[in-house]
Amino acid sequence: MNTELIRAINAFNKHKVEYWIDSGTLLGLVRDKDIPKGDDDIDFAIWAEDIGKLGPIIKELEPHYKEQKGIKFIPESTILNHVRGGLHISIHYYHKRKDYAYCFMRAIRPKNIKKGTFKWALWIAPQIIYNIFGKKRDTLNPKIHPLGKFKFFIGERVMFKIPLHLLDKTILKNVGEDIKARVPKKYKEYLSFCYGNWHVPNKNWNPMDDGRALFVKDWILKEKGEMKWIIGKRYGGKEE
Image (cartoon, rainbow, N blue to C red; front, side, top):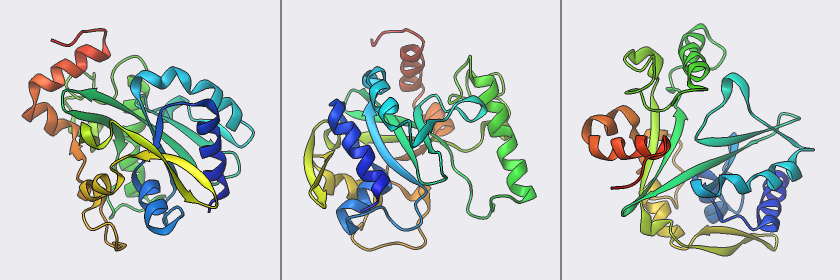
C-alpha cells in the first residue's frame, strides 16, 4: 500500500477528526487494496463544520506536505502538496442539506487538452484569474462572482450532490496491511452511486460520468432556491 496514504490515514485517526476516504482512493482501497494506477491524489473528505480541526493534521504532515495557497487556492477544499512531487492530498468539505450532501469541486480539464500545451495555457489562465478575484469573493458560484457572467472565466466548475444516507455514517474498515481507515458505512452502495459497476476498471472513465457530478451553473439554473440557501449559508445566512 502507498506509504503516503498510510501516513495520512494515521494522522487522521490520531487526531480523531470525523473523516472518510473518498472518491478514487476509496474505490482503489476497496477494489485493489491500494490507490488506483494513474491517480494523482489521495482523497479524503470531512464535514464542513470540522474544517477548524484540520490544523493538527496539517502540522503533523508538514515535513512531507505543504498546504497549497496563493493563486491556486480552492476555498472548498484543502490541498496538501508533497514536497518531493509525490501524490498530493485532497481534503474535500461536504455540507449537509435536507436529505442530501453536497461538495464543491475544482474545474475539470477536458481529456482533449494536454497539460503543458498552448491550449492548456488558454484553459488554465481563466481559472487562475478566477481564483485571484475569488480570494475575497465566492470562486464557485458564477452568479455572484465578478467574472461570473463570462463563461470563459467560470470554467467547468463542478459540484457533487449525494444522498445523505450514503455518507451520514462511517465505519473503521481494515483496508490492508493492518491499516484501518474510515469509510462510509454503505461504501459499496456509495461506490455504485458514483461509478456504476465499480468492480471492473474502466479505462475510458470520464470524471463527469461520476453519479455525484453536476455543473455549478446547471444547479443555479435548475435549483435556484437551493443555491440561494447555499449562498446565504456561506455568507452568514440561516436555513429557512
